[in-house]
Structures are given as C-alpha cells and as structure tokens.
Length: 154
Length: 410
Ligand SMILES: Cc1cc2nc3c(=O)[nH]c(=O)nc-3n(C[C@H](O)[C@H](O)[C@H](O)COP(=O)(O)OP(=O)(O)OC[C@H]3O[C@@H](n4cnc5c(N)ncnc54)[C@H](O)[C@@H]3O)c2cc1C
Image 1 (cartoon, rainbow over the protein chains, first blue to last red):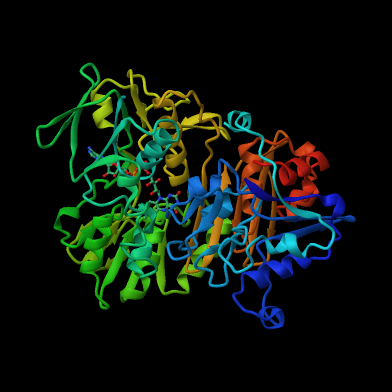
Image 2: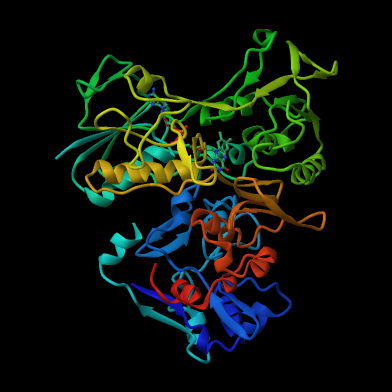
C-alpha cells in the first residue's frame, strides 16, 4: 500500500510539512487561524542536526507494536492505516513507549494521543505533508515488496 | 478443520484468536471465560471509576468482534479441569469440551496476604476486574476514608481512579517508595509528591500489623482509620489448572518460544506464564498487557500451523498519575546517565555497549526509540549515544540505518 517515505538528501529543513500537517488536521479552513498563536502539534516532525534534516512520521508498520500493545483497543489497522479512536483512547501512552520511530505524541487534551493517519480522516484527501513539501523530500508511494517481506519481518 | 479452544477472554486470549485468524479463517474457535463480560480492557477499570471512560468505550474489541471473527464466546463459564490426554476441558456446568489445540490464558489473581484481623473488615476490595471496580464504586461515598495497601501499579491506579470521589486516601506500602518495581528512589519522590498534591497521604516503609473493622494499626504503631480497604499488594499467576494437568511450571507456566507448554497441543500466554526477559536473560513473570497480547498472538499463529518465535520480551510500562506521565523499560543495571529539572526526569542505564533500561518522567516524548534500543539490543557504539542520551531521535543512527527506517516499508 501507499505510505509516506522520506529522503533526507532532499530535505531542506524548512518545516513546511509540520505546518501543513497541523493545518490539515486542525479542521479550520484558514491556515492563519489554524496556526497563528497556537501550539504547533504536527504529526510529522523534522529532526535536524549538523546540517542534516529529515521528517519523521508514522511508518504504518505491518507488525505495529503500537497496535498490538494498545491497552484499550483504541489503535487499530484500517486498510493498512494505523488509526486511533480518540473516543476510546485514555492517553496512557503505552504506544509512545512502544513506537520504535517515536511517531506518536500526546494530543492537545493530554487525554489521548495523536498520530499520522495519512490524512484519511481530514479533508485533505492525500497526505498534506507530501503535497506541501517543496522539494519532494517527502513522497507518497507504494514500496511494498510482495510477501517475502512478511516472512522476513516475522 | 481444527477446533481451537481458548481459556481467557482478555489480552492474551484475544491476541491468540487474532493470531489464529491471520492464518486460518475457517477453523472453529471457542473462547471460554469466567467473567460474563464482552472482552474489556482490564487496565481501564481505574479510568472507569474517575469517568474518563465508560463500560461501552472500555471494550477491548468492538461489539461485533466475536461475530466478525467467527468465534463462539462462552462467557460466564468457569473451566474446572484440563485433561491433556483426552484433549478436553471441563466446565463448572459439568460439560466437557474437546479441543485440538488449547490456549491457556487465565491471567492472574490478586494476592491477599494473610493479615491479622482482615476477616473483621466488612468493606474490603481488590482491584483487578470490572466486577471489582463496580463493587468498589458502589461502596464509595464523598465521606469515605479509604486505605489502600500497596503503592504498586494497581494500587496507584486505583488511587487515581477514586481520588475525586472520596474524603481521604491513605496508601501504605512496605517498600520505601511508590511504584518500587518501575521507579528508582529519585523518580519515585517526584511521582509521590505529584500525587500528594491531590490530597493522598503515603505511609511508606510500613505495613499493617493488625486490621480492625474501622482502623489499621501499622508496624510503626501508627493508626489509620478507614471505612474502605483496598488490598493491592500484588498478583499471582493462575497456574493451577495446567499445573494439575502436569504442565511444567515455575512461578508461572513455562513455555518454549512458540508459547507451547510441556503438554502436547497446549499453549499458554499472558500473565499466567513466565517470559524470557532479554534484559536479564532470565525467565520471569512480566504481567503486562502488551506482552500478554503479543505472546497470545504468537501462540495463535503457531497453533494454526505457522512456525514463529516470540523472543523479544522486556519489562516495559507506561502510566500516568493525574496527568503526570512516566515511561519505563528494561532493567536498571550498569552505568547511568541522569537528567532532571525537578519536573522532567530521565535516567538511562547502560552496560556492555547496550542500553539496559530507562526511566522517563514528565516529558516522555519519543520514549519508544529508547525501548527499541533495548528490544533490538542495539550496540551503542553503532549509534551516536551522546546525541540520543539527551533526546531520543533517529538522527543518532547511521545514515544507512536512518534511510532503512524512513524509506523502506516496514
Ligand atoms: C488496575 C490495573 C491496571 C493495569 N494497568 C496496566 C497498564 O497500564 N499497562 C500494562 O501493560 N498492564 C496493565 N495492567 C496489567 C494488565 O491488565 C495485564 O497484564 C493483562 O490484562 C494480562 O492479560 P491476560 O490475558 O494474560 O490475563 P487477564 O487480563 O487477567 O485475563 C485472564 C482471563 O482468564 C479468565 N479466566 C481465568 N481463570 C479462568 C477459568 N478457570 N475459567 C475460565 N476463565 C478463566 C478471566 O476471566 C479473564 O478473562 C493493569 C492491571 C490492572 C488490574
């Protein structure tokens, strides 16, 4: 299936992905109103050090430790996308403990978590970080290697 | 077509059923549980008491789960014996059920130590199940003075659950600190004072010498008056049915890394088993939900005929107290690195080029990157440890490793 992939070679460290992500998931129609004077809580985050930068967001793993370890059943896989039911989530952060990529964060309320859901739940349609990346450092592609992958992952 | 019988309707049992169904969509699955409820999240019973969830939302799987997965759920039925030779389990109704493969996922029970005078206490509770939570909730009133024995995970979550519903809470524990199984002394102090701000009183390094109907006399001589007693000193694995059937057991049921027990066609998973903890290289009980689920899932896959090992078990835990969070994993052994500003606290333990364990309190962001260093036994010399010490980050990995993480499908 299609996922978000990142190539650090092309990343400018401009952080636009973080803004587009926050905006897309804000439910607000104007970017200014969505972002101005508000804490930025993007589901994709840029790491920077020593001239290197890259964005990190949920890998939508095929063997997702966050979903398996979720103590409430709030995290589940829907058509390959790892989604959270914020109504069930209580914000125990077991998924933050579990995610090897560090891609899950507390949400605004602190009583649930927020994570990349590939913009399947907002009006954007396809990942806003990808659309907004000026240098194609973030792409949305199918890189699955058939079933042999599954064997190896196990 | 085989018949899979699963005893236990919680994390390990559900994991098993889902594991079977990834491989085998057709065979019969029967789940038997003595709890009469749809599968629910056990850790959420404290959130239920404080109103952060309700009985519908705390269901561990959707209402349609059994139907969607073609599972027969026999809820409210107690298994009284397992006969491995005949491949049957007996129920309290007298009925016998035949299995081709059996999953034993009976979890654990609250341990109530013998305490002088305990039988004179009318309002006493344990805190393990939905029924326990319902019973406790019924007994609570705004005037209640509650005594909780045990400042471990379950006792502390109970405290959080009831804090706003009662007049006072006193917690007594033999250990000299709260959450002794997951926190070091300094971390425990931070958590204790955060909880004290909510009016909770702690009497640590002390224990109940004798109980009376309305007060406890402690070893130190202190007296604690109470109306309601909660005993949360620990849990014991439910092993007796399999032990009686002849399975190899230590404190918990012993399995190989497919989760098969010493009995033919009998598997076990979850709180009733021992896990091989890769951080101490020893078999021990890890009574934690993620571990229970993953053991169960792995067992299910093997029961359905696909060989797979589960060999990455580590102790790990996430919990919050009144919005103050802590995440811990591994074993606290070796050299340490500590950072603290009085609210956010972090301690890393490392030995022989490996991260052994860590404690994060307050700011717990991206903790899972540390967990994965432990789980994958990553040589610290292969990453930029100086960098990752301060903040968990993927930048600390080699370029090829970073690229594998971010540009390949996982
Ligand atoms: C208050 C509380 C908070 C917790 N918080 C956390 C947390 O934050 N994070 C975490 O990782 N873990 C937490 N835990 C621990 C977690 O709940 C357990 O690790 C997990 O539930 C284990 O799952 P299990 O399937 O092995 O066993 P259990 O959940 O104990 O389920 C056992 C099942 O077996 C059934 N059963 C037992 N005997 C029989 C019999 N003879 N016949 C029929 N059925 C039987 C029971 O009815 C039950 O359905 C918490 C536990 C409690 C009580």
